[in-house]
Length: 111
Image (cartoon, rainbow, N blue to C red):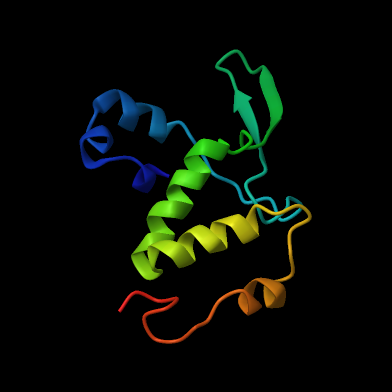
C-alpha cells in the first residue's frame, strides 16, 4: 500500500492516480512469505498475469544489517562470535550456539 512509501512520494499526483487504479486482493492459496501474483487488466480488456517473488537477499547487505543490529545489544566480541557461529555450515542448532556464549552481565549483553 501507500504506507510503504515516503510522505513526499505519497503526495505525488501520478502516484495517487496510479494507486486509484489498483485493487489488492488477498489470496489465501499463497504462502505466508513474500510470494504473490500480479494481474493487470489493460484498458483494452487484455489481462496480463505473472507470479512474483522477492529477489534473493544480498549477502553483503544482510551481513551489514545483522552487524548493525547485533552490536546494539551485544558486546563487539559476542556479536562477532555469534556471526561466526551463524555462518557455519551446516548451521548449528540454537542450543549449540547458546553454549558458546557466557550470558553473564557485560559478557554477552551490552551493559
